[in-house]
Length: 86
Image (tube, rainbow, N blue to C red; front, side, top):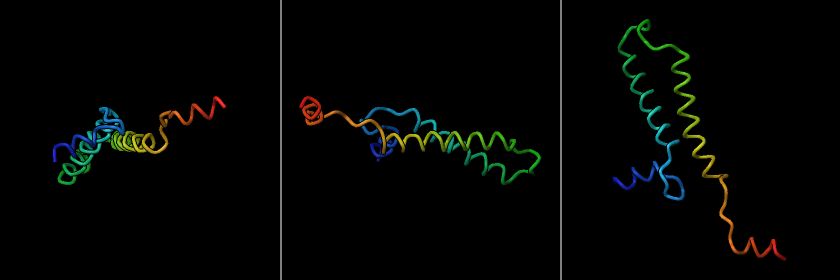
């Protein structure tokens, strides 16, 4: 179970990914803030631009990690180098 959770914060090569950690922390803080504000008057909540900024940061971090995984650089194989030489 711990390996599965730890693998969430690693990229396809097994390296630690700060984008995923940042996206996860933004998502958790946004959810906690929204839950906490559901029990308080609307005048005491954070500003709308702040909520939007945190939401866009979370979306950007997690979305960019997905895009990197799908369309990231592919490693060069020996077959590719042989095709270039001939």
